[in-house]
Length: 232
Image (cartoon, rainbow, N blue to C red; front, side, top):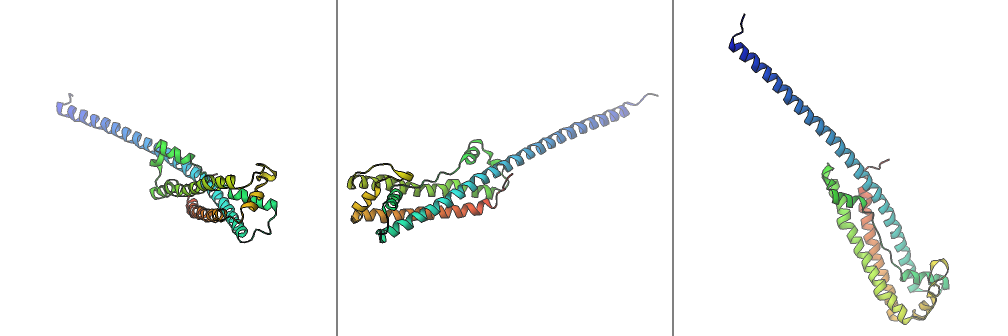
């Protein structure tokens, strides 16, 4: 029995519809699987970057806290010497002058931040608010600490060193335990100079400002790293 043209058209349309549906489902599933693969890759990359930030920021936090303690000790010793340096022996004065003519310079770890800026990997972060807080550290807080580093470096290299070299006595430039052996001679020669004592007071003020900047940055880091994964 011959099939009517109408039935053949219906069967052909049904077959075409099933084939089209199969193609659409295949493409949809393929896209879904690709999206899932890409999402897994993005999540792995996000986790890697967060753990890398956490590692670097924890290291920076430890450095800042150590520098803060060092600055606090330095300023306390300088203030004590300004009040009464009669109890300090030559070795202690060498160390004190070494402090006056030295400066701290915080160098944060920036490898992950640089990678993020160069690769545009910020797109993988789901928590954009957390990302902004991380970037705020590198783009605002670290530069603030760097400004105080520059203030103290300029003070030491532009004012303290030139004055001591010009006004102080000649002495050997190296000695035991890393101190410039003979600096006590400069201290004793200049101790009553108003200019020298003003340099000491200025150094104390600048270091206190630097220590406060470090304290503020360290406080922000402490809060931030608590939100970041520790990694394994």
